[in-house]
Every structure is written in C-alpha cells, then in structure tokens.
Length: 257
Image 1 (cartoon, helix red, strand yellow):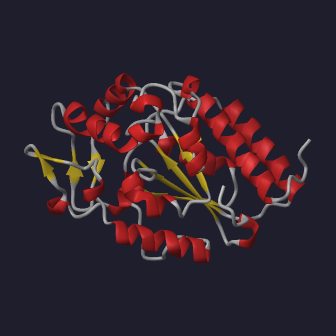
Image 2 (tube, rainbow, N blue to C red):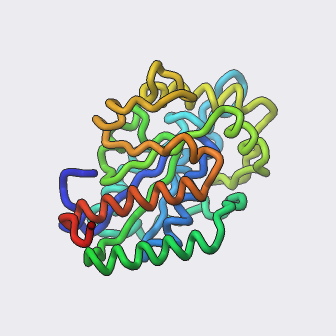
C-alpha cells in the first residue's frame, strides 16, 4: 500500500489491472457491490477518438499505451485523490459494455458482505474506495500513473482463456461508435501487446509462469493466485482478503485477531 495512510486521505485509490478478459471489470463491480461507498473508473474511458487510434499492420491497435489519452487519465486520478470522487464531467461509456456472467453464488456474495460489514464495524473504516480497472495500469510505460494507486491488484490469465473470452465478446462501445475485433485480433494485437508490457512482472519473462515476487513486492503489486484464473469466486475471495488487509493496516490493525 501507499506509505500515506488512506485515513488521512479522502479516498482509497485502487488499481485493478491485468490482460484483456482476465475479469477486471467483473471483479471491480463485485467489490463495488460488497464494499459501501465504492465507485469505478475505467481505463477504457480514456481512449483517443476512434480516428486517432494507432494502426499496426493495417489494424487499429486499441491495446497499446498510444491509444490512450494519459494526461486526461492522470488529471482524473489526481482529482479523485484530492476530492474523493470522479470529476463531475466524466461520464463512463464503459458501463455500456456488457460483462459476462460472473458465476459467483449469491451465498458467497452475502458472506463477503457480512465479512466486510464486520470489518468496517471493528476498524471504524469510513474512507470511500475508488477503483480504476484497466489493462495497462501497471506497465512501465505508465509508471507515473501506477505510482498514484494506494492499492494494486493484478489479475492473470492464460493465452487460451484470454483468447476464448475475448473472441466470445460481441464488441465494444467506443467514443464515437462501436468496435468489433477483426479476425485474428487476439493473436496479432492483444496477446503480443500484453506480453510486451507485462513480461517484466514474471519470472523468466514468461507471462504464463510464476509472478516475480521480488518485482511485485518492489512495486507493491498483489498478484492473483494462479488457481483463481478460471474461478471468479476464488478471485473475489482473494481480492476481499487483500482489501481486508489494507483496511486493517490503515487502521493500525484494529479488530484483527
């Protein structure tokens, strides 16, 4: 976590990142449903206009840092950290995009809500949470953005899972219209970009291998356990534990056993 206690700040700014189709938006929405006073901002809301998206080998590349308006993103995050809420003129188009069934049972969600309710009661935590979900938040090209987060969660997935999930999507609402991946987009654009931007987080630069614990510790990134790759239930339970530890740390361990 950030060295500055969130209790002295108007908001806990959380980054949830990982490859396309790793479950970032789904997890963010589940956490929002469980923790009170939680909002979500999407990296996809900071794309350039459709006409300004860079072209690679004749295909628009929506999965590179050059496709994003980083000054606007930085300004929005700075506003959130100072005011505890998103800029009033920022309207999300990402919320118009569908998210598949998460597969988490209502009983698990209710148990998480009760767990969080007890946590907040024990610790006195009242700080709002602002989640930012995006595919490039922790890349070295966005180191300045990465440093703004108080808490960083990195989701992982395999090539096979990412390809299957991405190709099952119907498309995406964009700033000016609608985008559908052309044939071969995952193999030509999505996965190569992910490898290029995130190999440094893994041992031997193998993005389907083990996360490099030393690198993640240095950057204060919490890596999702590998067994949660195809289970949003396991991913959610892991994330709640990370949030719980962050709250207890910020409140001096109040209520911990």
